[in-house]
Length: 105
Image 1 (cartoon, rainbow, N blue to C red):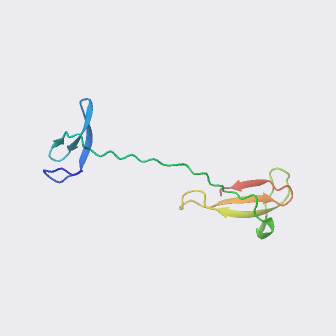
Image 2 (tube, rainbow, N blue to C red; image 1 turned 90 degrees about the vertical axis):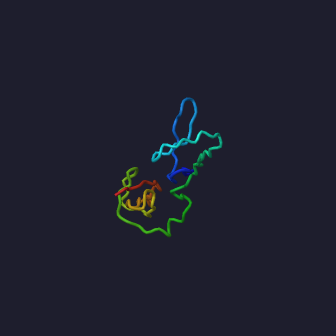
């Protein structure tokens, strides 16, 4: 809401036991009960980052040591799991025991 006197955006301020809109520029106070309150609700959505059912033969292979069975060959793929200015996360899947791990470098 904008101040009817000077046109500046009104700010919510506690005035006694209730809240009012006050202009920081000219000091005008709107004590009416017809203020709009905006609340935002977000819903968490689960996203599967690793699709274990993917066809392994379609993935490229690289030299990487499996932390579980010490095999030296793994499939790999990358996913942007963090902010766009951060590097992608590289996932590995052992060609022998099918263990999946990730590398953040």
